[in-house]
Image 1 (cartoon, protein in one colour):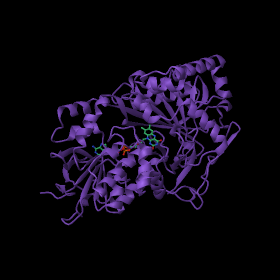
Image 2 (cartoon, protein in one colour):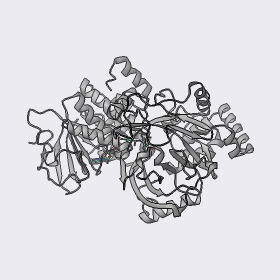
Image 3 (tube, protein in one colour):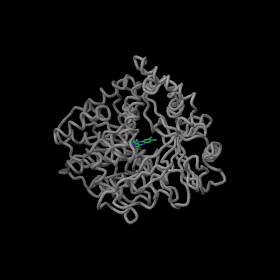
Image 4 (spheres, helix red, strand yellow):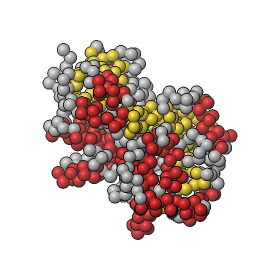
Length: 571
Ligand SMILES: Cc1cc2nc3c(=O)[nH]c(=O)nc-3n(C[C@H](O)[C@H](O)[C@H](O)COP(=O)(O)OP(=O)(O)OC[C@H]3O[C@@H](n4cnc5c(N)ncnc54)[C@H](O)[C@@H]3O)c2cc1C
């Protein structure tokens, strides 16, 4: 008989890798659990959701968290990869939330800067417009302290037909000049038509976007990029994606935002009422998003929780209505051990969870899980002496533009988005005299693009940026490539039958699906964290229903209101 938290057979001592310092002694995992000990929660995955769950359990319950992570570092999709002192953020992670609970939580982990960082970002000048962001009185100085959250001002643009457009697109003189009067008239007419005769019912993402922007604007700025991201025509993607991600964004909201901005000035980070796509300032850890999650992991281990890297949950032992244990494989040795648990938090892809249940789920649930679709992601890191952009792009003399990221809308290249890590945080770059870029490609694991040899992929990436005039390939100093599977849970494939999975798994009283792939939901970090926080709320309050977890990112406003009314915003 194994007691909760105990491993069987005893753990080997082959881990962790020397570079990882935040874990407790692996040989002792579970050893300090004695019969009188608290309950144990096994947590699959050390991304934002898993680590938030672990932290909250330690903070508010007597339950001991054991976190198993298959990767060699924490953070999940929100990790930061350090390549020779140059740091890569997979996707560019803005820290912004409409949830006060999350904003306060982040602030406790990494306080907001009180002095300028060593770059020009606190007062960006761009095309005669100057923007300044606010500092927090008494906050840490990023030039002296590492544990600090920077306040960044967002600039992102679209590169299309060799020209830069504001993102979100603004109806201003530059847009008119770039597009030409004839196209502007066509855009205006098609927008008027879309408002007068909207497509009903609104079934697909294409319907959703045409209803809000008109067919012409949709074709110019949304269609190609969205199809690059999803690898599917927009008329085959559910309108629900738009409803969840860009529900508040429309021409009307963009114009209202532009007008009111003049009255209220540039937003600080408390832009609670602002549609997410329009948020102008955001928080960002000095060393990228992974710094947040490394810090949380350290706190978790310091307080008696455990975080085991390169340990994969390969089996889940279930009885009728609860999860009793996890089978965990040590990736270094291949050894599989059984870890008993009182609670099981899953942030692994729900498809994998269903597949790994030892007493199989009903056939219909397995069929839906098998049919879930994901989109995968490749980032090419390029280190350059300089960029090749000129004054027309708003570039400085070294070719550097102020953008955090640029959407690449050019039709003849595969790259979807370009991150300029210098502008996320100057501390992401080892030598401030260089430009450190992340080129993002959306693909399906195993497809032609994904399977290209690393050197071929990197060469293609360099050629593409050279061809569209962003760099001169001779300026490339160094490069790297990262492949990240299952970055986007898709709202097509078997997704429309997802309710069958949910109904079945919600029946396990001690199982909590949390996070992004854990719930197959397009959750950002804040949503992923909130699901973990609310799961712990439920444990504390003895609530067995799971509906409040599923309402995060669907009925966020309602949820926040409810928290405030009931005074349960413990953040
Ligand atoms: C391109 C892109 C841009 C984004 N931008 C933003 C942004 O600007 N702001 C924002 O807030 N969010 C952003 N996000 C979303 C953010 O990355 C996710 O919301 C967040 O990382 C999800 O956290 P999670 O813990 O649920 O899952 P993950 O981050 O996916 O972590 C899950 C972890 O579980 C591990 N795992 C999986 N299976 C197993 C197993 N069987 N055993 C053990 N471990 C396992 C994985 O290795 C992983 O580390 C972005 C995402 C992408 C793809």
